[in-house]
Image 1 (cartoon, one colour):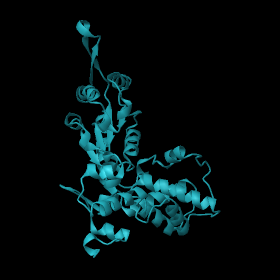
Image 2 (cartoon, rainbow, N blue to C red):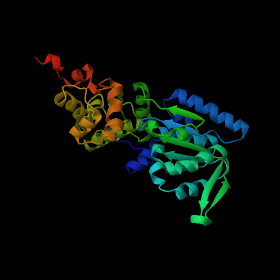
Image 3 (cartoon, helix red, strand yellow):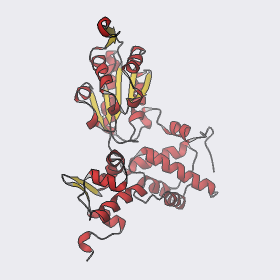
Image 4 (cartoon, one colour):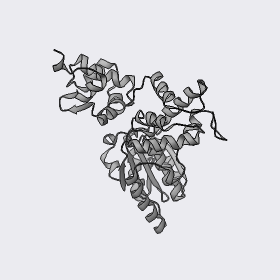
Length: 332
């Protein structure tokens, strides 16, 4: 199979190679890109740092990529960390005091920042001041350090878990939506070329439909289809290669994976199609309720397969049709 001249050798390097490196390579989220372009150009004209920005949305939709592209457009250095990595106040203070003027600080999984650490961020974001307590007991004293102009870009998959004081300090909040089929196909086609893979239009359609409207998933399926084609000595990814790769992964044509079907079938068979409470459903599946809320449900809700109601989760008619099952009232 033809290969790119400098093809990466592992999945981590492949993922880096597939990440858009310039603004025009980023497909989708057009309204967000338009608004970001205005914010960036305005900041450049005023020769100052951008407002702090918050990106919200499901995992794999491109929040980190957007943050890196914003830094590149601003010509700024970007420092990257994540909420779970900030274990104590000193961690946050060390990062802030090492920022230079114009730098961008990117914090992923911002909803997992400790509340004590958040309190350090408030004055840093508002007045570029770092308040520290030095010493303990009667000899403790307050130390105020002035910080250089910087921009905080935060990303979260759970905006509802952010505290109101932190959320209110961002100058702009953007919610990334699931991608449409045409945009996913463009992403798969572009990335196939980067990897040096020949593809048929039908194979792009198969992969795009099963990609859960998410670029990260599309890239994962593209790599697995490439593996299947190579192992079977095919010089390109055709429709059959794509379909066989999905079949081996137990992924259907809409992108439903075994855990999705397990959740739907649990509601249908154990709870007569619902409604069923989240805690009860989580116990029946031996899953954490956060996993169900964050990973399983969003895509199933997008497809219209389940609905959240005041009394619990309900499987909708279209899901029965997809699974080839009769609804409870039709079983007689």
